[in-house]
Length: 201
Image (cartoon, rainbow, N blue to C red; front, side, top):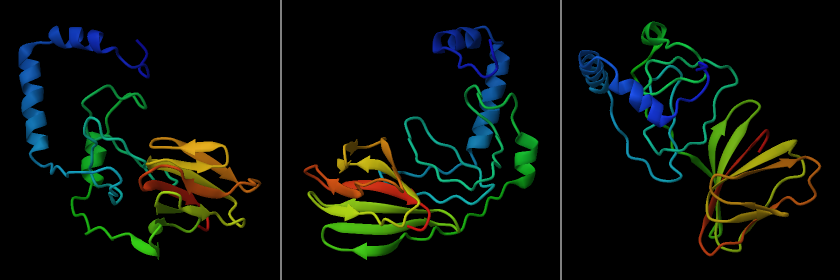
């Protein structure tokens, strides 16, 4: 089986059943020791989590994220509970040597617009890229600047339309500079939340 191919659950379970029970117990003991250093954090839809580079972290089952990263790929795999499809090894020793365990208190998103039907918060501000969390009340509109080279609108909750595109949770729409329709409209009956990303927002 290829190193970059997912293992079907039934086959994985069969392989695990064939392992020496002492090996399984040893793995469980080591994982429990590692997990004793973890601190679970409750999350709700739309929450923002800021993690400094080299801070060990993991997503729990069922958590879905929009991850905004620096343009350089600096990931180290400390450990993994399933097959790693992006590389054929862990980076445990290098990760432990480089990791940091002090995490600064996260900055609260800065509110840029606070109106009854529209709230815009600054989430990320880099030299060439920024991200905003936008909340629109039902029927509210937000028109994007024509000066934007591009924008990416990612749905978090509710229903937003942009031209012919319908943007709901876990869907996205690219808005090129040439787009003639640039107005986000909440077409749902509840507040809609999206992430708006791009340069010079």
